[in-house]
Length: 155
Image (tube, rainbow, N blue to C red):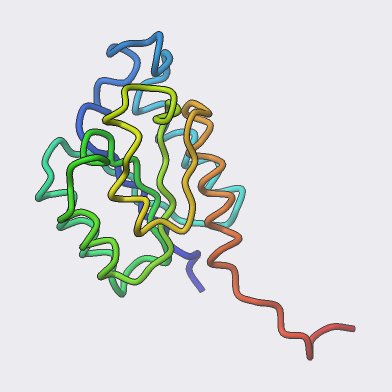
């Protein structure tokens, strides 16, 4: 049996991690984040599909493709957090557990960043813990998608 698939999606400008505002986002690159996720997924017995796009339509298409294919979605919607009702609708339509991740604490930043459309579809939100938030999201997702223990199997 193949391991459960978790799709890790990253929105606009996250391809610039390590170069863009390192005082806010740190020095880790998106490749570093992908390696962190791959290591965490392996430890947790998960498979991952890690992607990044600057395009809202492409991100929505990727979410839709998760239906019937993935066990859960981890998403850092970046700039689409506060603007994309289309992304919210797609996340709601797939009917999967969703964990929203933000490298910074969006509630300590500019007022316009405090509202997230994505949070309406999210099972949970991790914000402000740097790139380690991705590993924590994978750990949480593993718990969400793990098959429930059958009480009849208890010894």
